[in-house]
Image 1 (cartoon, rainbow, N blue to C red):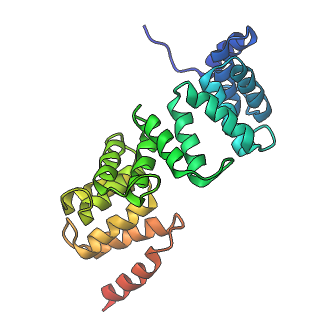
Image 2: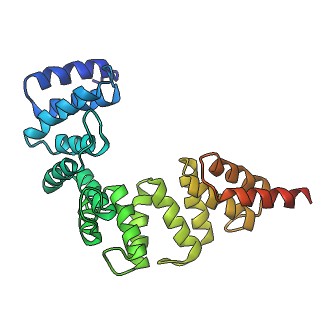
Image 3: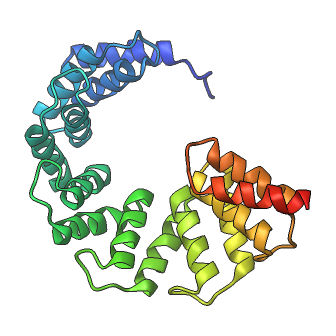
Amino acid sequence: MGVFKDYIQAGKYYQLSADQGYSWGQNNIGYYYENGTGVPQDFLKAFNYYLKSAEQGNSWGQYNLARCYENGIGTTQDLSKAIQYYQESADQGYSYAQNNLGVCYERGKGVTQDYGMAVKYYKLSADQGHSIAQNNLGVCFAKGLGVPQDYVEAAKYYQMCADQGYAWGQNNIGYYYESGLGVQADPKKALSYYQLAADQGNSWSQFNLARCYEFSIGVTQDFSVAIKYYFMSLDQGYAPPQQAIVRLTQTVLL
């Protein structure tokens, strides 16, 4: 027997649980306060509940507390504490923390930049099926960051996250199918993956899909559709479509 989704009731019971010191209740009500789900949004309360949860060793609470310290949510930004709690959560095997810790190592955020460590944590997360980590690991293989450049490995991880519906993975494997990097070139597959990502609002994929329609890559040439997707991409602030729109507009008017 099911129940109707009721965030207010959920918040009520999370609060009761948190008030009794249960770390999962503390984490969950913290998340509700952070996002204003079922309760008034309150970043300070969110931070304090995450802290209580984290102090009990809850890996999700540690991860959420790290995000607060990284982004200044309900507290002053403190990257060293963000790393501390990402590390504690990652050491317990939480894939989201492993991915974020990898990002910090890749970008040198709160730690000395270390691509090898970034790859280590991306792989730990990716092996658990975390789609963003799979894409990030694919980028490392594509660019040779912390590992020898390997387009086949990059394609493998792009495909994994694309299969989970992650737009950047769909865009990236689409480009690989278009270019024949790490996979056999297949313009129709490229078009298909660009379309999937574009439908999720990915501006790069909208641009790439527009190129396909302009230059007949895996599809019959259609300038009107190309212009449509160029504008969709441009409207999100992606600059490359500007010249393409001018070029195509002139072509259509000739």
